[in-house]
Every structure is written in structure tokens, then in C-alpha cells.
Length: 33
Image 1: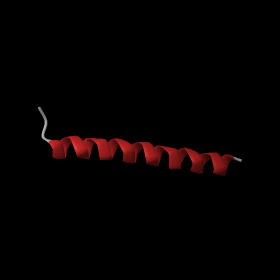
Image 2: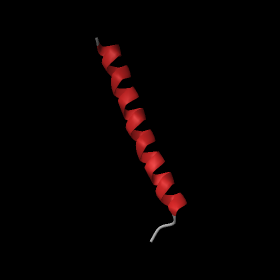
Image 3: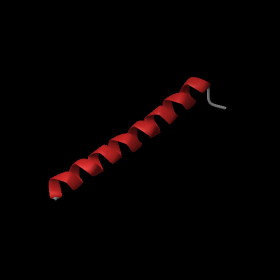
Image 4: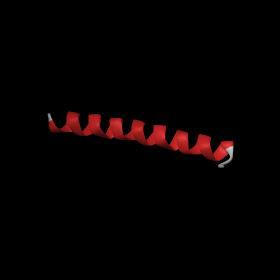
């Protein structure tokens, strides 16, 4: 079983990637229009 800090770090990284992906997608969408 993984230690809690590792679990929190993975969750934070997942949310960060999701957030960056949305920002990147919106930025590209604005540039194309």
C-alpha cells in the first residue's frame, strides 16, 4: 500500500494535468478563431 503523501501527490498531479490541458485547449481554440 502506498503512503498517503504519494497518493496526494499523484492526485494533485492528475488535477494539475487536467487543468493545464483545459487551459491549453482553450488557448489553442482562441488562437484558431
